[in-house]
Length: 141
Image (cartoon, rainbow, N blue to C red; front, side, top):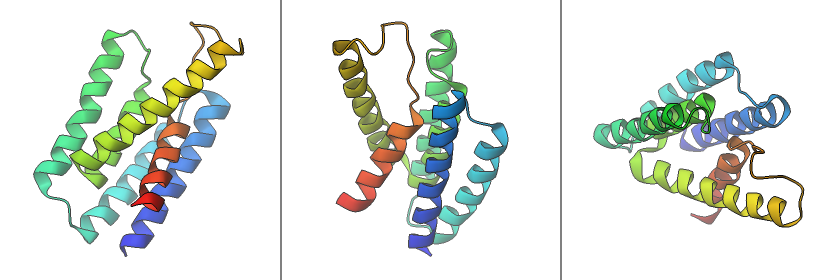
């Protein structure tokens, strides 16, 4: 069951990544349906204390508030995805996922800036980097 839940998370993040790249937004249906399915699956397999799940959720909510304060520099969809991964993975794994995703995003941004493929005001999707971080966490742990 654990492998099934992990595969479902990977597929969901991949689908969200494709939509984030293509449309620069993620549908609420995809977020909500995946979030519900994954939350139930990860709650069934257990292994993550409730306080850790709550802390992981709060990390996403903090990101949501930060996005509002930064006038949309952090997307609502990105924040909701971090909320869902927090519920599923718990605080430590969620913060690792988010920090690795942010690091990969920063590296890509630097690459794009150096090679003049993007400017400082351009945006890049975040969820694909979360997906890559998740894959890295699965295969390297």
